Amino acid sequence: MSSSRPPSAAPAADRVRHWLQGRDLAVFHSVAGRHWPGADPLLPKLSRSANHGLLWFGTALGIAALGSSARSRRAALRGVASLAVASAAINTVGKGAVRRQRPILDQVPVMRQLKRQPVTTSFPSGHAASAAAFATGVALESKGWGAVVAPVAAAVAASRVYTGVHYPSDVLAGAALGIGAAFALRGVVPTRGQLPAPGRPPGEAPALPGGKGLVVVVNQASGTATATASLVREALPRAEVVECAPGDLSTAMEKAAGRGRALGVCGGDGTVNLAASVAATHSMPLAVFPGGTLNHFAYDLGIETVQEAAAALTAGDAIQVDLGRFRPGPKGPEGADGYFLNAFSLGVYPELVRTREHWSPRIGGWPAGVLAAFHVLRGRQPLEAEFQGRRRPLWLLFVGNGLFQRVGPAPGRRHNLADGLLDVRVVHGGRTPALRLLAAAVAGPLTRSPAHAAVRRRRVRIAGLAPGTPYAYDGEVAHSGTELLIDKLPEALTVYCPMPV
Image 1 (cartoon, rainbow, N blue to C red):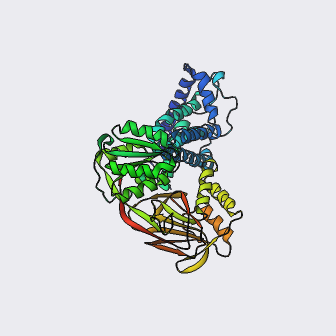
Image 2: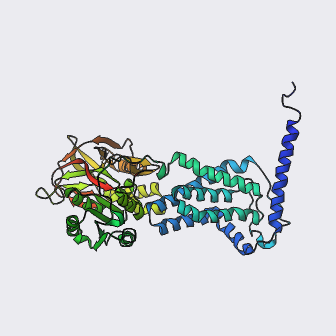
Image 3: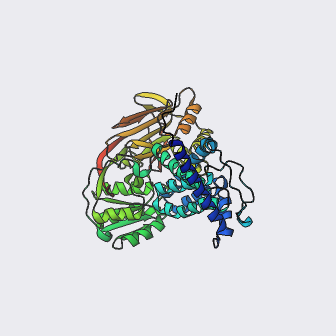
């Protein structure tokens, strides 16, 4: 049977292929034969530094350390993850699909050539794929860091042609594969900007251009609060900024509430918790400037920088959020109620998360979770409590102020800060308590798994506690009596917040 393909089709395809190969070879020879000032001592070293991704791993550590923000850490993590996806694709499919020989080095000056020549096939370029994947992944989370990394990634890709180990088409194909890997990962694990905007019931708050009428209380002992306070003064020159020690925060906030139109706070979640209770009591809006080691509430509002908070203040943009409440409060039955913006927890959860977050930047979230569980298991027993009308052993009880969503392998943000519900997660002691806690650590303390009970409630009652049982709320630790009642005050707090575009 004769082929239905026109006789001219094969020759035409051959002509196109030969033309592309000719152009590819011509560009390679042009690069090899041209003198590039300053490139001879630099590009070969840069090319070698990218072997096995070492350059990019070091860059990721630098971004995470120098950026000192959640966005920088996300950019570093996404860059490394994108690189891993690209490397897996290159090594499992790319190199075996087209077995192209490496270029002949006759025309490449000896001083440009690598001391150790690659032994794998030429197409596509793994170095170009890794460089493009890392740079694209970083840029998807942070355009600023992406602009810093992109020239370095382009130089690494160009160095592969310059040193004679790849043809230009190898580099272009590798770069395209790397960019595709970064976007493929984004399809599975969305970037922060892709996630739905949090629930935002509008709140009424005065516009404060330049911060006029705003009093900001800064916890000098919180994370980067002192440095952040300087940024607040620059962005809001008409605001009053009060820096004080942790023991003076409560008094300073009460005084600030009496003389300002809005209360500002700069510190971690525990400091923000205190400011929120003062602001809610005095029915005044709250402005949050992330300046602590952990800034979960600010990030769930979509506030990662001082500039974002300042823009909301200038425009008078605000929302209403729920305030979690527990009774009796930290000072006992005779004291005021306790409040939480993020979460309330009993059992080993505070220690588990603290250890996990300490190690996860160094060894990754999954190994850190297992390490944290082993650390907590040493000498610890589940607590006994009556929960939902039944007395049982509990490793941990987590009560979130609103439903926590997952972003990839770790607990993520809350999409709705005013849903009126509590997100209750429990890890029971059961017959194999150690295995259950390990399973919770591997899956992530806030994931749903057979070792967990996960329900949504408007209130939770816990009874039968041993007096003095420790509990945590927004990073602060206190001790209970024999029972606790946890509920919510819907839309009780007004917070300045940038509106979605």
